[in-house]
Image (cartoon, rainbow, N blue to C red; front, side):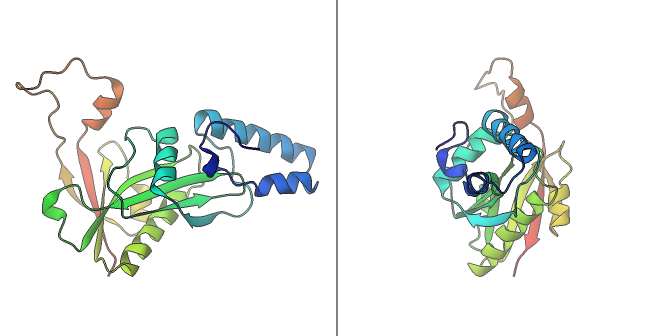
Length: 204
């Protein structure tokens, strides 16, 4: 039976088979029910169930997941590939990769991690696993380097854990210009206006 909240293609029904086969205790079933509801409604998980695994993902399904859980970015437009991390209940994270947004970095040898989105409270190694897989795929495709950006307020721990190097502070584009007056910025735009750090990883 399809569940609401996350898109239908974001659910793994392995856990339902375990429930049907009566291999779980009543307490475990209750915890799974709560976890499923939180994933549906709030993009939050309480704990991983079963073994986690990397899978490929389509642009459509990646964008739907990003729309459900991402804090400050909209779904991606450019696309080279994407990968996802799953447990026995649902998708718990995605990473998307495309051509660099900055034209001067679009040299034919570089790709950009454009989104890294996770359910809140995902396993501590989830982000680094997705970044590691993104690097492996880039290498297999013949690219030499990956780049990505984090907000100035973010620590970039997952990038450090995956062997990335922080290389440059990038000024945010000015939103309110004399030729383009804006009203008071909402919270989302205040976040987007933060300066960013560029991260790089050599893959070949």
